Image (cartoon, rainbow, N blue to C red; front, side):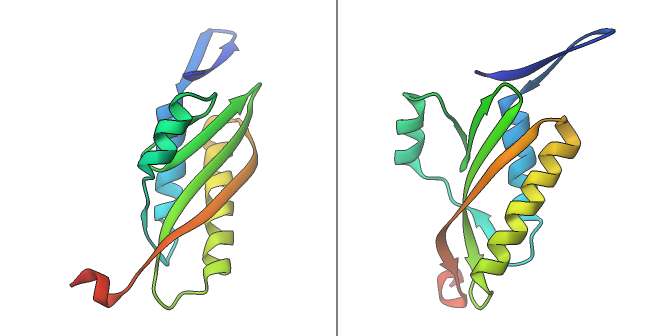
Length: 121
């Protein structure tokens, strides 16, 4: 599925999966302690052959208005990882639901790396 389609009184509204992935990405990056989103090339290739959708580290499964999201983040050194992950989950769920009207049933957060001062040099 490449887009979510919704009929209205005035016509049809289509929300492309790239838009939903972009909402999730931006919501995750707004969380203090998140350095970046990690793009997993192997996962992208595997998802290409499955029913999922993968764009720049955001994995989506959408069925009948229900969205499942997967994201792999790079956190800043020194943060409390579970706290950051919980906020990422809530930010993504809230942003997608408010902006698209879709229901988010899952937001799975993977910690892919830690960004430290040594990594920046």
